Amino acid sequence: MAKSLRSKWKRKMRAKKRERYSVKELAKLKEMLDAAASTSKSDVDMSEMCTVVDGKQVADQSAESNEPLDTEADGQATAEMDVDKPVRKYNPRTLRDEHGTYPVWMSQRAIRKRKAKQGRGKSRKLASHKGTAPAS
Image (cartoon, rainbow, N blue to C red; front, side, top):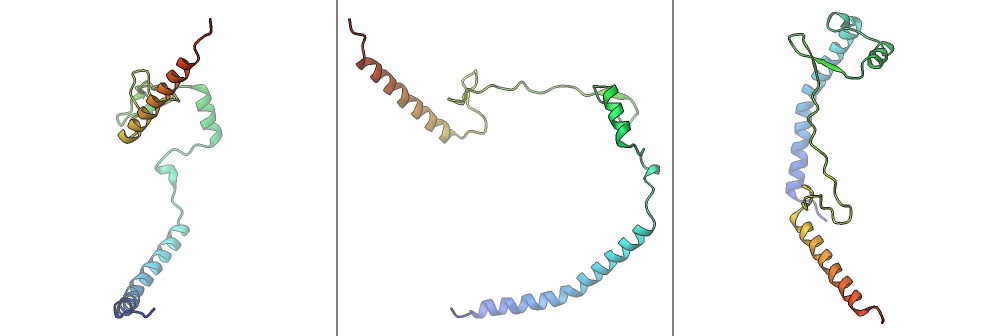
């Protein structure tokens, strides 16, 4: 296939754009390298900002108290509240819960399809039972 004039023009313009932006990109990279070199020499002391704790101390604290306490901005400790919604139990065959509702993630099209399938199954079961009446 022949190359169109449009694709040639686009390629040419992209090349010019790369040349133009390469100068800025190179300056940014050099600036980042300088910043990285200067910060690695003067390591930041984290003890001023926060308390440094090793893994053993954390494990000991978690073993002592089973219930973690969160601290608010004013310094008071508050326990975390359990306000989880009760988990609904769905029937794996019909995918309906105890109230007869389908899951939220299920689309209406899928619900209609399931209902139609279940209806067919019931009629087939009834027909098969009618034909096999107990012999007396």
